[in-house]
Image 1 (cartoon, one colour):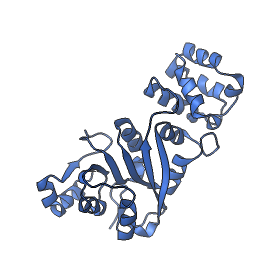
Image 2 (cartoon, rainbow, N blue to C red):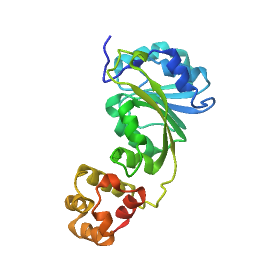
Image 3 (spheres, rainbow, N blue to C red):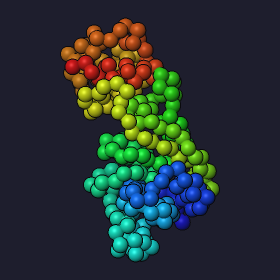
Image 4 (tube, rainbow, N blue to C red):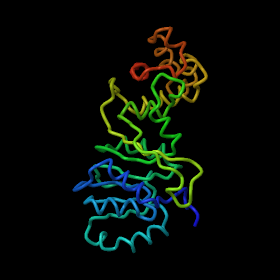
Length: 254
C-alpha cells in the first residue's frame, strides 16, 4: 500500500486512544480533515460525536461510504468529498484530524479564520515545533506569529512513524489549538497577515529594509509612514526578534 495524496494512515489503536483522550467530543460536532481509512472517525463516533469528514481521494471516499453506511444513514457522519482548503464546510465546534502534511499550513490558517472552540491536530514534529516556538527568538517564523496571534497552542502527544501505514520518514506531534482574541488589537486581519508575510519573506533583512520590499503591496507612502512611526531600534531588528505587539503596531499604521 502506498500513501495517496500525501496520506499516511494512522493504524496504531494506542495512538488513537491517546489522541481522543485529549478532548471530550460527546454530543459535539467534530470536523475531521483527511479521514483516510476512518480509524479516528470510528473513535470519534464511538465517543458520541457528530462527525463532518472531508476527504479529497475519491477511492477513499467510496471505502468510507461502505464502512460507515449506517452512520451516514442516521446522520451521525456527514462525509464530504472534496478539497478541505476549498469546499464549503458546515458548522462545527471541534477539529480532530491527522492532517495531510502538505496542507498543514494553509488548512490551519483557514480553520483559524473560520473559528472553532478547540482543535486537536497532528503535524510533522518539525512543523509543530515551529508553531510553538517562542516569539522573539530565532526559531520564530511566519507560522509562529500567525498561529500565536490568534490562538493558544501546545504540543501534547508524540507519535512515532510506526503508528502509520505506510510509515512516514518523519515523526509526528499532536497539537492542541485553542482560539483566543489577539493580545493586541488588529483592525484588518488580511493586512496584518500581509505584514507578517512580507517581513518573514525577507527575514535576513532588518525590519526597515523588509518593509521597503513591500512597497508594491502596501504602497510607497504607507511604507514611509510605517517607518516614520516605528522606533529606530525596532527598525534595526530582524522580524524574528519582533514581539506580537510590534507586529500589531506595524499593521496599525494607515
